[in-house]
Length: 160
Image (cartoon, rainbow, N blue to C red; front, side, top):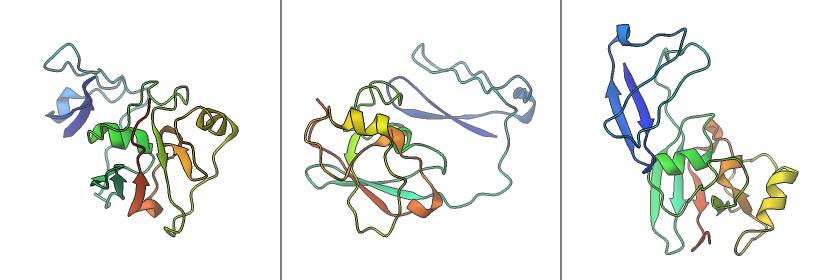
């Protein structure tokens, strides 16, 4: 079984575990190679995937035009996908609590992908970011779905 976990340095690591090393009733607790490794405890029994469905591809485009294509799991936030893949322009200082605006992005219209409307809390936080635009979103508030395959997410030059 392969488990993916993140460190505080926003790097991902892969850990191979034997089936008997996972307690599905209590969750998974993994001690990593350094003190900065996060320990994930699962509140529910871990559900193993029955198949490997293709993951949606998200394209993060920096202000200088550089594009980085990543695979993101359905149900994951755009912010967590960006952080997991080392997209440095997404600072994510509040960890996805919609409290800082440092995961600000622009999602251009006309991509043929319908996104849910931003809620009031997100709209209030967007008012505080640098260079807000009509297509501004907070990546912590956008949940990846299979329909987002190929979505282009434009990143601002600065989050501060």
